[in-house]
Image 1 (cartoon, rainbow over the protein chains, first blue to last red):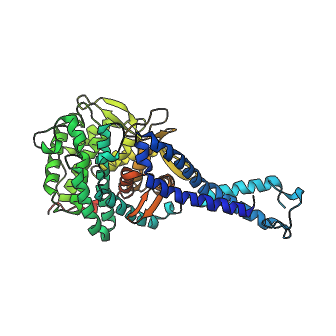
Image 2 (image 1 turned 180 degrees about the vertical axis):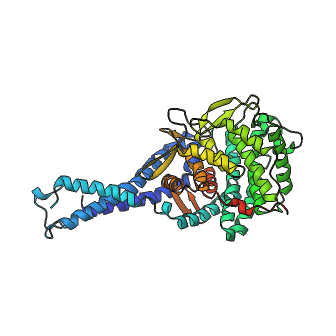
Image 3 (image 1 turned 120 degrees about the vertical axis):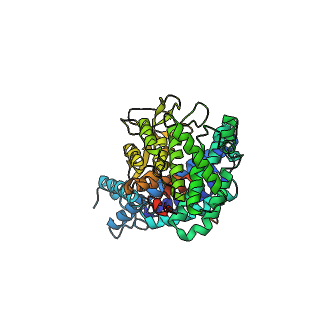
Length: 96
Length: 379
């Protein structure tokens, strides 16, 4: 995975985590889950699933991906930078 | 140069390592936890001021809706009191909020769930009544208020309720008074005993003569194999009902810390064996190994044997027993799933709701040194 992609994933999941928490707080997650009204659940459950997926990804996966991509970039030869399209890696050196 | 598999391993390793490094810094930092506790107390105080009646809850049972509103005011009062003890500079802010919480807790409408079950208002029949074991919870909040504000307008109610519960508990042949007609719960009795002891600590009264016998009789409800407390029993025969459960054990270990540190430690020893941890994130099992059971109104949801209530309540006992490792692991989980957020009224856990936030405030602020605030007996 490219460094830039990993950075976008981390930033995106962190943003979803922040905004999702605010949105669910405003929607009243617990009151909604306790409520017998199915209409609220239709909105709450998908938002909660996306929020927790983003939260777990942001804290447990994305940092590792970013560090892994950064480490891989440092270990590549200087003339084949990970972010630059000008000097693409030979097919044989492409990893993952 | 790295080979493809080598890089894959590196990435996976870093992903795991990154996760381990980033395991909730807040959970491992006591100073940040203390600051968050004050912010959570501000938020809970705001909840109390805006009223959290039974209409906020929709469990499908009027009794449970009422119990949850009652529980919110109870835990808010305990938590605000404990935070005021831990942070004396916040006393002026939190004691009035605590008093407001107690006012709602003892209000007729908040106790309607118990009045409906008994056919009378428990707080209006203290001298001649019986049962109403749930009043031990209200009394614990009153006792905590008394500890912080000796001259509170609720002082006489605190005295009367304590004496009524003490009379009923002393007369109980099997250490139980009924919470509702035909229903008795050892964990409710732990709350009754804890509330009496905290009241006596707050007013400087000597220990009750019946307490040693009560403690000995109460011990029969601790399962010898698991060390957990049976969830229900018969007040008439003393025969146990239901199974030994983590949620009742954890809240009892907290309540009994005011009445019997030895019993509280014993319950914690059983509870400690129910802890489970993955990558430093801890949870507690509701049932002992080899026993299965569903979640209910006491345990909250139970997933793969791990309970929500027992995990939250165990925060307090871990703090009281100074088990920092267990406390930190449970706190990490609460932080991860609870999703703390800040707003103008303080900070709270997004997924807590009014009851969850009040419980977490009370459980994360339990004070192992509360007895240094007791009034000397001579005064």
